[in-house]
Image 1 (cartoon, one colour):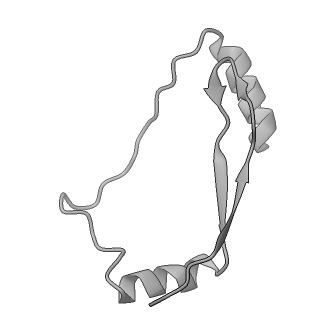
Image 2 (tube, helix red, strand yellow):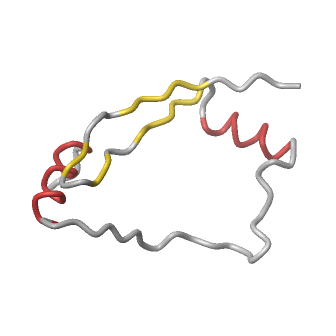
Length: 78
């Protein structure tokens, strides 16, 4: 058995009804964690092959205000 540890950072609140994301910080670095998951066969290839998430769509009343707030919150350039 393994003990998996992480910390979670939650930003309470929302912008225009769009709830802020949460962030996980794993106790180990990504390379170590992925190696362990693959060794345990917990990070197997998807049955449909190499898939990617190309977009997420969020419906809000004021998209520009939400975009500006999330850019500032996450440190993305305008």
